[in-house]
Length: 264
Image (cartoon, rainbow, N blue to C red):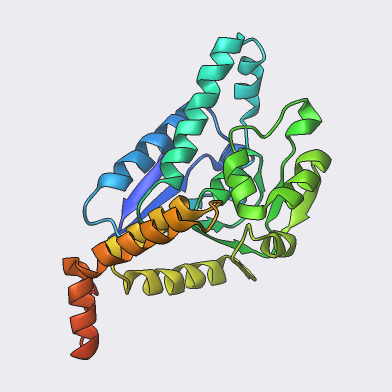
């Protein structure tokens, strides 16, 4: 197995799979892994031909959060050092969250702290029944600061008020109930089948329309439904209806054929 902390694989049909590859330390984050992931996500956002991004992990754990050796080093950081360190993590998560293509987390094991944040930053998350989750920061006198925008978005304020404060471990069924996971499957074999099923669905959809749909969510979320929102959403659908992609999709529908973005 490659010694790289994260491995990137491209399939012939445009699926990019990013695999956390530090199984000996439960794929815990250190500076190298965070920077590598941040660069990968930034590149994937702009790479033509990439239709979807899968974020997976090697070994028994998805991601245990912060690497212990990294935490030991951070204990001697200045406040400015800690700020720069946190911004690196923030960049990585923001780059993942902003990818204008479907992103899918495949959670085959425990996801703690920053690992849970990684799951929350993806569009779709599928986990095995034995997966465990925890926001354990307060046990160490810390707070889940950098991951908080994505976790709050995923599970809501009320759930965060519990799990940020209790630092308790919860299982995949609870994660599903909270909205952190969209689907729970029995085992890793079924995880692969669920991945393929989701990918088949998104690959049938118009790439630019999916990108615009993600941007639409970020635009309207949390805003009052006032005239500005009504006008902006009307402008967006008018622009999209006039696009070459929409014309192709509608024509293909009436001609009862596959649109040109669907691979045979």
